[in-house]
Image 1 (cartoon, helix red, strand yellow):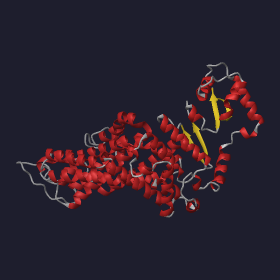
Image 2 (cartoon, rainbow, N blue to C red; image 1 turned 90 degrees about the vertical axis):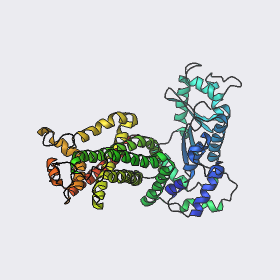
Image 3 (spheres, rainbow, N blue to C red; image 1 turned 30 degrees about the horizontal axis):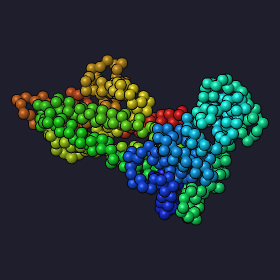
Image 4 (cartoon, one colour; image 1 turned 180 degrees about the vertical axis):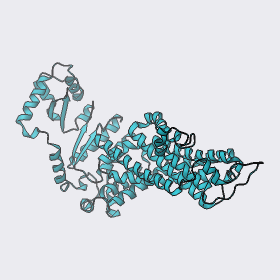
Length: 496
């Protein structure tokens, strides 16, 4: 509720914000659950919470799509009774509802009934049965009028052409029944906001302190939206151990396993090729974990984004930036936990600048893979993404320069090597470990061909590679992928 107040009302005084929140929670019967996580609320409480969130900015018109679905009879009654009280307070409440009980049906003021895509009735609920009687549709005694109306609409009591025709004639003659356009509704809503006060909500509290609330509200700035969304993402990471503690511990455990497998080879010329495999595995492991984490989590975030974005809670730009900013620290911790453990156990050169250079390039690869995971989940969905996602990143692995060197591949495949971001990541890792005037490697056997680090780089055709050139390429690629993902997300939201 606090986050909704910040996002909908902007920078207002904390006293006014807290009073408005407490008033709404008291009115909706949620005061006793104000410190309960939403996931632990009952179905009826969640429905009321959804209404409470939208009441923060006191909207004059509210739309509800089947608000009683999934609720028992008692919860349904409380939900409709609440909407009735909101309507009596001066708001226009529009609901779509299927098969309501007679008790719920009586709570509605006006009805718009559809059958075969045509309007069969439009008017007061109290006039429904007399209208049906005039067309020879007699509702039996003690029968639910809503159920009888559905039976009529599906044709169980005969043709319904007369109902549709009479409604069309009535609408043509009575201008009060004409459905306004969206622009007319928007204009009426803007004009009606000033006439609707927060104190219209039935509540024993005094109204004087609430009357000024709408006047103090303001459109939240981008910075405020970012701050609130970052705080919410922080709470999500804290409350979901899989996204934080489990991921970090898993990276440390894999680092421990790989470190034991490649134990003490990093500074021995006899195991240079094995160390090459270890460094490539570092890139590949971080790539797959970062890719999978976003591919699995983002499709679950999309419905929440659609609901809140279309309700005007925040801009897409602020949501996207907050998501990027919130994911980065988690990826940093995961990468750092893996690199520190494996770097020490494999006896890589004990130089802090080489550790930093290795960590930085592996982190960049992980961030790029995260964006690719989001883009894959956005375009394919989770199920298709799990099948086709690994196939999409497979070419980056093949043309990274580890399995086959670019000089040994056919000429018409060379452009694919230049398109693989893992090629630039592998080059940067090898430069960090074997370039920058690294001393001659000790040899634990009688003969070591790659005692000189530069000789090994020559063998890999990476002696002319530049670490910072690869880093610049990876950084630019990360920015471009962010822009592409934002554009695809924006287009997807517009099409919904």
